[in-house]
Amino acid sequence: MLQRFYVKSVSFLWIGSFAGAGLAFLSQVILARMLSPELFGLLGAGLALAMLLTPIASFGVGQYWLKAFGKEGWGGLRWIKPSIKLVIFSTIAAMSMLFMWAIWGPNTTAERVLLIFLAFHIAGQVAIELVSSRLQLEERFGALAIWQLLPHLFRFVLIVSIVFFAGVLNSLWVGWVYGTTATALVVLAIFSIKQISTSKFLLRGHPDIHNASRCETVSVVDVAKQAWPFGVAVLAYLIYFQSDLALVKYMAGDAEAGFYNVS
Image 1: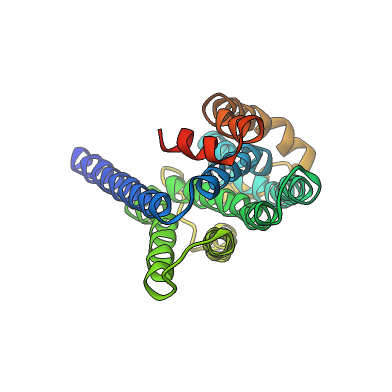
Image 2: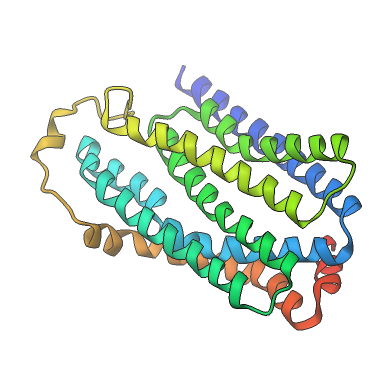
């Protein structure tokens, strides 16, 4: 019975991953065909910058939740409120960095518009990480697969709709797609995270909720001390795999970044 449960769970995750990858690929194909090489390169570089700032925003909190609840059981609830405070502060800081770069960096008007929209993409990625951690703690792998599929589905539907009705894509439309998707994810995440402190949160493997009240309280600083290694690990990974696209854009130009992004 247990083996069947794990096979079913892994199947859900595989299906969700393949579906998400397929929708992301189709979205990129449409964008590559509809946008100029310069604008496609700008989009790729902007997304790379947003993704590089995402670990600063999330600060490894989602990954640390898995460790805290795995070690303390229901006592992990004490980390939730200070974690949320830390994530709100760090997300605002990360978004502000991209806002400032968009306004004061060597960018054209189109580039500024797109980068400002992509700053909200950072908040959307943080929302995905936090809700994903909650669903893993509850072992709701079917819901996890759907949740991780949603951003790709939202963006694909919006892109296809714009192409169908407007017949054209520009920096404003593309930025709106990413900004709208991120906003929707944040709204959904707020409702989901709020439920962690209620009876709707079902922590698997720890049936006794009474030990939660016997644990010492923690502060935002305590969360930062515990979570930062997870954030640094993700940041190092993204620097290695994505920083090159942003460098190509600002060293060689938008068109070159577009061709490099396709390759």
